[in-house]
Length: 214
Image (cartoon, rainbow, N blue to C red; front, top):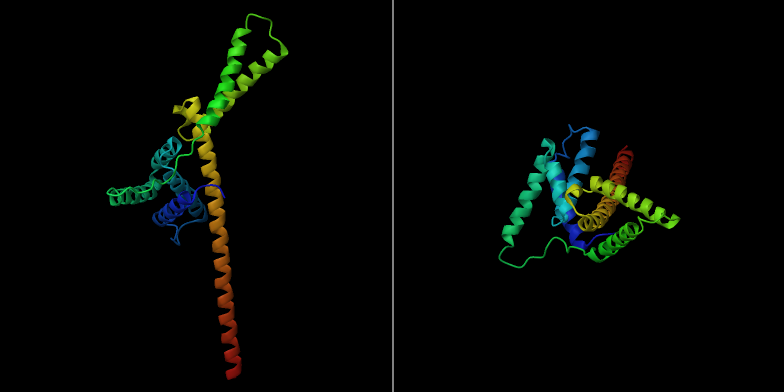
C-alpha cells in the first residue's frame, strides 16, 4: 500500500468526519447521493492529509465552491484548526513529510531542454530524421503537459518543475486513497459477515428452543 502511516491516519480520521457531516447515515439519502458523498469526502480527506501541496489546496478550493460540499469542508477545516491551536505550544509532527521529486523532475526537464537546444542549433540545416523525431517528441511533451495541467488540480498555475513534482505526489495520493478505500470495504465486509453469522446462530438457537418447548 502506498502512503505513509501518518497519511493513512489523517485520511481515515478526516474521511469519517466528512462522511458524518455529509449525512451519510441519513435514510433519506439516495444511492447516487450516497455515492457522491463518499467520493467527495474522500477527496477532501486526501487533500487535507496532504495539505502542504499546491494540488491539495486547489482541490479544496474547487470543492468548496459547491454549496453541498461546504458542510464537509468546514467540518474538516475546523477540526484541523482546533488541533493546530491545541498543539501550538509543542512541536507537533506535520501531517506529511513532503516527498522530494525535484531530482527526477530536473532530469526530465533537463532532457527536454537539451532536445530543444539541439533543435534550435540545427534549424538552419535540412532537418534529418533524428531532428524530425525530436521535434515530434517536443510537440508530444507540450500536449501531455497541457493535459497534466488540466488533470492536476491547480495545474494551470504551475511551471514545468512544479507540475512534475505535484503530478507525482498527486498520483501517489490517489493510489493511496484507492488502496485505503478498498481496505475499508474489505474490513466492513468481514464485519458484516460476522454480524450476519451471529444473527443466524441466534435465530437457530431460538428455533431449537421453541421446538424443545413443544
